[in-house]
Length: 509
Image 1 (tube, rainbow, N blue to C red):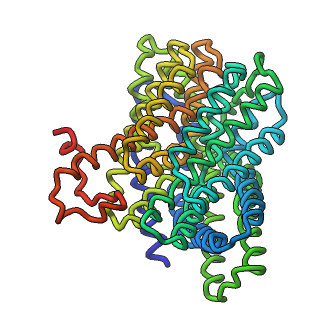
Image 2: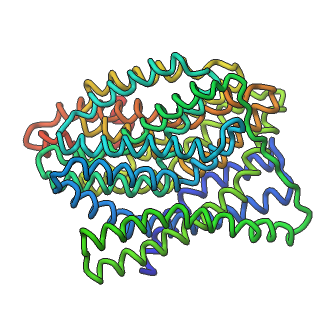
Image 3: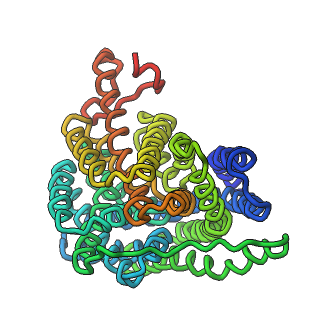
């Protein structure tokens, strides 16, 4: 186990290090930061590295196992009402525990946080049940996506424009560090029981469908509250005088994020224990392994949340403010894109999704291909977000065009890539993005005098949208290249899984 811990921490180090280097280069050149902010950023980075390593290991041991066991058991059940009720409760419980959702809910002053959390949780619960039933009844994912995104854009004709960005952001933040490994494993368990030629395709898509629910429920909430004059909660950055105050800043926040870690991990584990006692009845050895995994997950999440919120948030906000005051403030576009390129691979949920994709397809979809595709897509998204900060272009144009392209691509892209693409859109927007890039964009927006709700928010929505396009284009390229390969070298053509040595430059030839 110690070797596995070292391996995971090493992986997280390689993910976090580029972000640290970028921040340091900026801090010592065009956006100087005070010594207390830099020190807190360094401490936060160390916590992030260790925390993400422990979290990913724990998620593989516990969350993935729990999800697969529950998914396999429910797929065998013929009681549709039982499946719907259990999955609705499970989806609502997991979502309400997501730290990112709580952070987003705290930003809207006019609506009580619990109202937003309950609304979003109900949306995820309903659509998790729908997503699972899709697997059982063998409904094409593209049909589901076309239907519900059509409803979304009709609904949003009546939603105040100030609420568009926040509503679409909610679809990204609800599918986070705890939800993703559990949901994907739930789909894998159900698909394995189904066990036909499309089982690989059906293993994905739960995250994609679950991301739709919050957008709809938040849109309805926006209509009810009529938030045309909504305001946001302002960030306050305290200046610290010495190392003792810096240490106290981290120590004093331990109870807060200890509680968040308990709220995030506890309900999922409690639900599993009830399900285990009534239905699964796993062996003592299996339960011991799950308990160890839950321990790693809890400790890793605690360190991760503490490092990101206390160490990363102030640096992101202050860097954004300083970049916006520069005479050549257009540099926020390339700088934002560079940060976006690297930040996505530092997200725990992204690493878990990429690993599960590679394992499920026996390496036919390589990890480096997925990493590159997601990095490019998020870089483009952050670039667009920075352009919006400078110009004030409404987000609706990008969302309508982007989702329109993504849905049209789903008609010609191999179905497994469509499922992976729409899942990827949910997992790219995790704790690092919400606590570094959102403060970064808010710092820029407030300095430029823009509207935070319409201009700064929406970054998560864009980062959740662009992977839908880029990953599907990657799948389309695979499909075209695959046709040039002799039949005898193709593997599992009927499953649309293509085994190819990934070199991006080859796809451009």
